[in-house]
Length: 191
Image 1: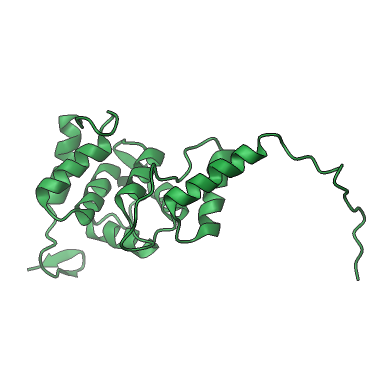
Image 2: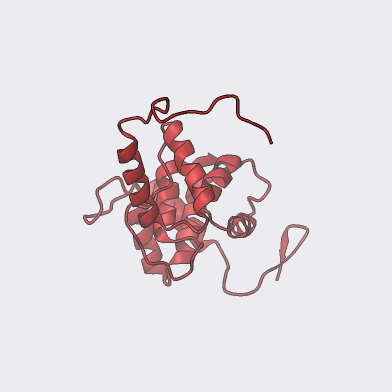
């Protein structure tokens, strides 16, 4: 049996004064986000806090129909973490995706659909638009969600976004042919 060289007594262990507040905020974040893998999500949460970045926390609780899948709240978290810029590094997107405990196959399928699977730098707005298209059931609802998720205005009011941003997102969704099963040979679609 190995004996520890030092045994700490309660007086030697210093607990920061704001520790209770940190745990309270963490518990509220867990309840709102409902992560599929609590351990992986917690690691991402505290890593973001340590690096003074936006943690992967949904703004409010949303009952999920498909647990562990992309939802509107998870997409909003990704947009908050990665910004509303035109490009994003693939490794950073994968890191944030894993922090939200989302299935990596979903991301890889989408990148394959957009033909960005091997790109180190990705068209972020196109990715956001296609994710929104997967979440909504109609084209008007997709356009509405694009504006709601990418606006700078507070939630609940009008959701204006720049025309170039809307055009980029909407064209990305419009160019996809998701109605029928697609077959590809050497990167070319077989009709």
